[in-house]
Length: 297
Length: 195
Ligand code: HEM
Ligand code: HEM
Ligand code: SF4
Ligand code: SF4
Image (tube, rainbow over all chains, first blue to last red; front, side, top):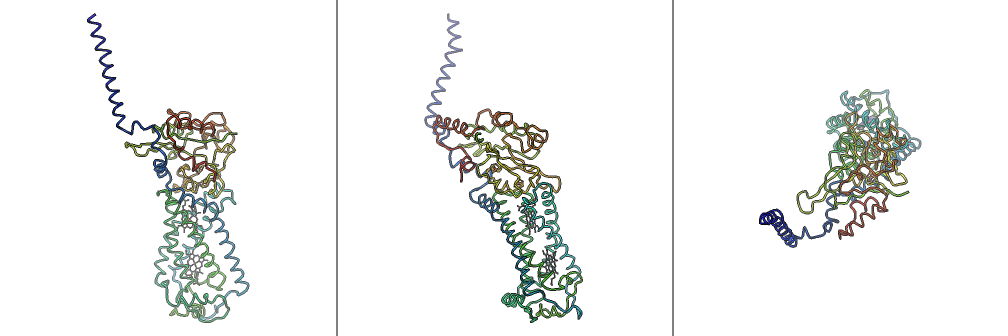
């Protein structure tokens, strides 16, 4: 009897009492600690959800939605307008006013050194590829997507590397000649003289205000494109930053294409023979005296 | 046909990452791609919560709106799928997505992004059902077999619910009622509210 009593006490009652005391203690403790008594779930809702949003993709309402709306509706239309409107305006200019011709038989002036020409053509080829492949991505639907456009992306990345280097050299080579001058304002007022066929001396140094604008957009803008493009390639930033960078890359890309088209028209059509100067380095003396009247030959 | 939805019950998820492993293994996903991820906030502090998120298969999916080559499409049951042979890996869908769902394996040249990969709701892809090509490119097609996605099927706490939207919502509503808390399911507003 005594034996069984001891066993029961030791094996059952005492552990049971300890357990019961523990439970009571836990309940009392729980009563004082709101974390445990609050029904699970009461702490959720906006605050923790906001933290979770941050952990995934940042502030979607602000940047995600903006990016989505722009990319879904605006960007391809913007590029379409630029690609049709600017050539149309130039076609009109070519028909109504026409190209400027200068005497290519007379004396020539050495205008572009061989290094300058080399850098320019490296930039020109790589940038042309960037424009074509960039537009391939933007209008990918029309080409059906897939391997072709994926290849375009690869070419875009390769050309970006070449162009970024060329842009730095171009910046350094031409910086001195491209600084803004007071007479640039006068040039802007007469629209560079392109609206008339008269050969009056036009206020410009080695480069006119229009060329300067292209220079700054091409070099500084080009490097911004390289910077934004680099992160679009690596993706090593937050999602919100990616959205902003993509928006910049697209808007600036649109501006660059617009000015690129202007540059093409001016150098290939509007001034007859300008293309030769970037190949041989020589310009007709008459052209320099009229279009770059402030340039000391 | 029902409308398929995911729901992760934040009160139940215990950060075991079983769903992530099941998805990766079951669909033989390329290295560096996680179709499903689990994140924990306030780790080790009061208010610690975990959640498992993949693609939510949104209504009015932003990814579809931004894709420049129309590689993404939505089935009648709401499941959003990508055609990897059309995708050009531009990354726009990732930037548009509110849940960071689109993922990119690194490609062959310059390590540039390859075709986008994301949760398929275990419904394969645009290829023929159960074809070898479908399995290779997109993983299993459990929906065509009449099963729920792997992740939800194996979730030990049944935190992760997947399936017909009405049933999922009912289960969750009942749980919320029993627990006495009145919170909405995370992500549902963003993913499914009609704009
Ligand atoms: C001016 C015309 C250009 C256009 C229309 C253009 C357009 C694009 C487009 C549509 C993309 C796809 C990704 C995105 O936008 O988020 C892209 C990506 C990129 N761009 Fe450009 N771009 C241009 C110029 C440049 C320039 C000048 C550079 C650099 C020097 C550059 C470097 C890049 C890089 C590195 C990427 C990421 C490639 C990738 O991983 O997909 N782009 N560009
Ligand atoms: C295939 C396309 C291109 C052609 C045919 C071309 C042609 C020319 C020509 C003929 C000139 C000499 C203009 C003159 O002084 O009369 C010139 C100048 C210049 N080019 Fe280009 N170019 C091209 C692309 C580019 C690109 C991509 C850039 C820069 C990113 C660029 C930047 C410049 C600059 C800064 C000048 C000097 C200022 C000016 O004339 O506007 N060019 N180009
Ligand atoms: S969660 Fe992201 S990837 Fe999935 S449908 Fe919505 S926007 Fe598209
Ligand atoms: S990465 Fe592919 S699916 Fe995503 S937006 Fe670009 S092309 Fe479309």
